[in-house]
Image (tube, rainbow, N blue to C red; front, side, top):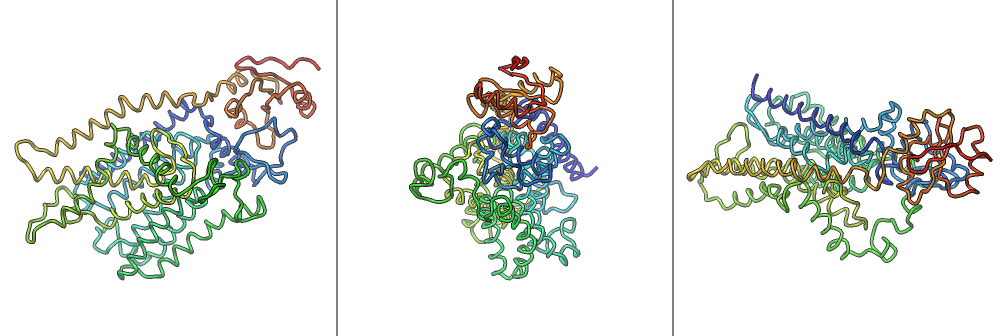
Length: 536
């Protein structure tokens, strides 16, 4: 078996490990129930789509079936979010395994990131080993934010998959003819229009899933393409094919809002918070939002969170290797004429290739996501130390970090003094990863268990009681959205499932609910104690 065969099987092993780890976390930590208002809204809308509907009628006694990000508008009930992720999630809902969608997408994304690592940086021929793809995929596997978001029911994993797929299409669209034959064939060169359409389709899918992230990343890719066109490396027709692939998919977003709310520019967010809009001004955000807030508060907080939590390493070491390709490029410019280049070791690119066009593209994608989110007031939260709004740029962070480790090892290999210094870099990275796995990740996992006091316990109590169905379960002592999150998500959107969970707001509400669902047996659930409703 050749080196590259073993490396390919290593990548397959990493992807399978990721799938298994995510499946375990989904079951054991998140218990297959939503742990945020966002997830509740996503699973609700996915169930609506699974019923081949866009919305459902607002139910009578709607206060008894309330979740903050599931909104009612003109007699219709729907999730406030964009439809791209709920549409994918509905596939899992139809199979009865919603968690499976993110698990599959996460494993595929790691495979695509490894493929990008090989495509962008490995030029030693098909028989020369190149370890960067394995490093990039391996770093992704042990990134806490990747594991947590992939184990959740949030939209970020789907958006990340589409962004990564767009980069795959972009590589084939723009790759030089000098690329090794295993990656680029004459057939590929003759059908670049298809890869342009694929790039557009993936960006369009990103837009339908997370529009703001798509604008930031799409701007970076568009700038990259314009540079290649001006340099004569690409034809203007490539932009046409990207548009033909992407616009029909992107158009699903305004068409959806037109069908749901009667306006293609409808913003469901303002139905929850009237100030939840893009831009700057005294009426944006709960306290107003200015450019100063954007740069010196919002972005600084996100960047600090990223720098100290990206890979779960110590302190700011998470960004230690990411800038190395660009620092190496600066060092290259200081070379004296006639200085010899470093040898090309084991299929790695040479010193003269630092940074290459793909390094700049990945950096621009990161910057695009950072800049675009200056225009939105919300921090967006962090999962596993990763600021969620920057998650779409993860391919750039993984690949540039793996590239920085590769360059550092390669550089120090040429600088032997007494000890082989490159082993210090390898040991340092291994120590950082070990620290994350042994010290950082277990504490983060413990914090995710029962987040917001949401567990599957209420659902398990009802399931184990083996009630006479159909049944109505009146939830007692509901004080916040989190107390009703898991039961709400378990309901059918049309309230016609075998079990209907409702919030009991008091005696009057109880009587109205019992009259509305008089054909159902009635039960009261208080904590983990389930008992029949008193006789009327």
